[in-house]
Length: 284
Image (tube, rainbow, N blue to C red; front, side):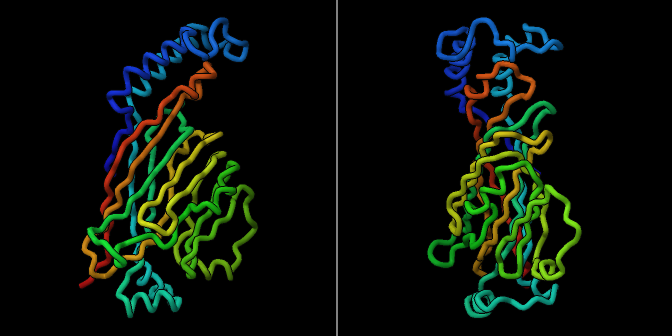
């Protein structure tokens, strides 16, 4: 798993640091002067509170390490292996139009320190295969979609499955279930996959397109849960030799131990990019 580091563009570092130090001195609208009682911790000296802005500068200078990973599963052989009948649209697309369908499990894992959490993450994935026109590879189904945003508003574990209908189903597992419905289980083609989420606002763009974007605004992070998972079903022409995902990544993190309450609002989003080559089915 190749890591990339999200950073602030070099030309912006000096001006941001200057602005943050000015805020800490009281030269702008940030709260300054005697710290409110909420800032004080009997086990943490006031000097440590005043050092929070310098700690934030060090955090931004360090950047955020992100490990992107994509795992592919060819779906047509999976239907056959499970003894499931292909839906008619897929059969026509496969036999008459020579398309393949791939499930891509995509993970962006943030390598954070123990007291560090994300409060913003954005991922734009561009599907590129060197082909233009109607036979270019594209996503025909994605998770999460805009309709899934309500699932992300409460801390929970989600159970996500791709059904034989080529649609994603989602269940919340905050409360353990007594059993598994046999009929529902029979519909599952791949999964279920477990996703831990905090209280998050989710925006999605580009569903069913070659460019898909997810923006997560984390209101309450789950400690130690720093993986962002998404799933794509790709429609790929059989003559396609290579499919690559180009990912633009933006993240912002903070320390849960900071007592300077306005500091999180001053942090910049750090950016990185990555390229992930997908494994295609053996056509021999």
